[in-house]
Length: 60
Image: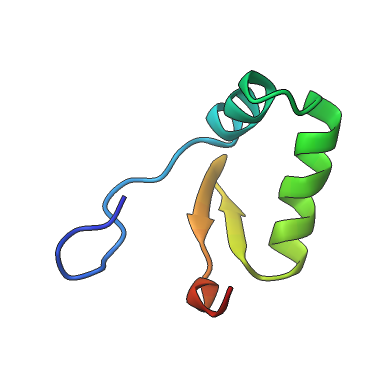
């Protein structure tokens, strides 16, 4: 979530993202692989077990 200035206010945990993917029908191992791939593409940052948007995430 971001605030009115576009600054990141809160971010989901990695576990929450994986849980939501499973809720949507994505197998957990596939969701984990996709999350890692997004990190490799610099779309997200994984730090402290949280999923942050990368600084240049808006290009996607």
